Image 1 (cartoon, rainbow, N blue to C red):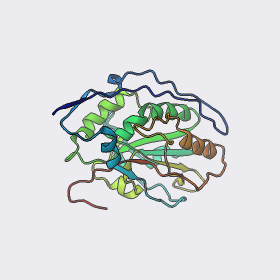
Image 2: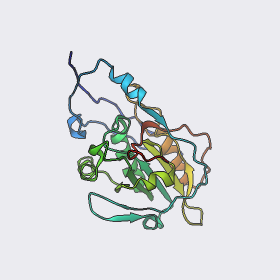
Image 3: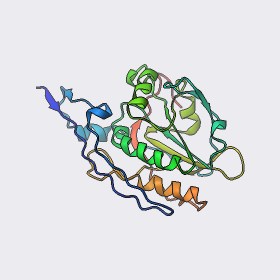
Length: 245
């Protein structure tokens, strides 16, 4: 028997407590504006169980890890970006995301608002998609460009076709967040590798960006970031068939 599942979005964003400043998210978009559509399923598995079954946690990467070199294209503009492009900035946020993952979709509006806010304070931001188009064509570069334009991403959304960037960063899931700080040496040094906040799809916990924003505030104000960091949770990166790291 076919079951029609309708997705809705009514999350409220709350004001973030931070060390140096505060900001708030507003959330008034419609589901269709973010690219969601009613989804017809021919399964008896509840959506909540489907999402839980797909969960992957970001693995431990040693704090102090140096940002690896990369050379990745931005499908929306055709520009190729490298680590050196962000040298003038005091901090760099690298996010591994993709188009299809429900964990990413759950945070999209919050990610856009948070990154817009902190870019004005000097934070450099990029997002990288490393998923194999052989298994997930909806994560391919042409759809990445559409997503970046539709959601007005305030950061370059880069395509890691070889999956070398994911390997070099040690990324395993989407979303996954790496916050690097400048310490007078090159390249950037990892200060935070944890979750956006406690919110998850179907959790009824509001999206605030609390954990990541606190770390960004500490980095931008040259304060130490706590080593007690909750891992990000999401979909596993979809490796090319037969390819393992």
